[in-house]
Image (cartoon, rainbow, N blue to C red; front, side):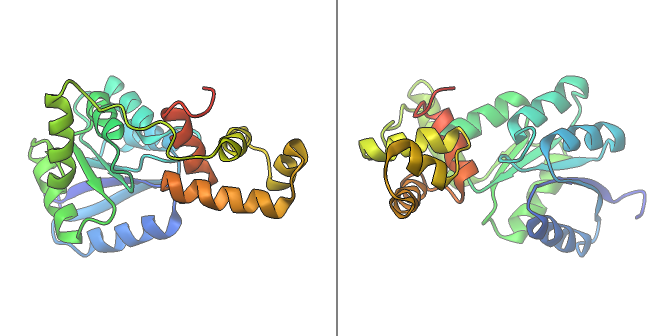
Length: 217
């Protein structure tokens, strides 16, 4: 690593994603990954220890989410330059990330070239939000803030019951016993819930439900 390379910390809980990012970035001249963390809590520690030029921060992680981790880093080290990298295109995540101190916001399906350009721009002191995300967020800001989105997600009453128990950490078998339905029926409800909430797994579904007020805090 030369003295002119941009040092980068990766904070991402998915190993394959982290490895892929490291490979892409280390192949780019002038960029170098200097550290990694697999959860938000560890990410805060590594950021304050390494003081990298740029931090790539996932949103959904164990122990501490990316928004809270960003806030913790920036509150201690105001010069930190954090780019939030996530699968979520929700207005509230954009606003929360910026309020927490993030200088960039990108979706994970962005081209590698866009990611690299964003790292360079944020390192230079710019604030950059992916255009398709920014345009929607700015429209909501002009209207007075994030729009109140439909809270039901078209969930049936039974699906809402399953979601509440899922968010409490119950297994399919435990949910089935609690609601007096079969485990197979629970699996079907869970599949429908993930599809309607556009969640990749149960953990994400529980987090989305909590943020949208679908389950008790």
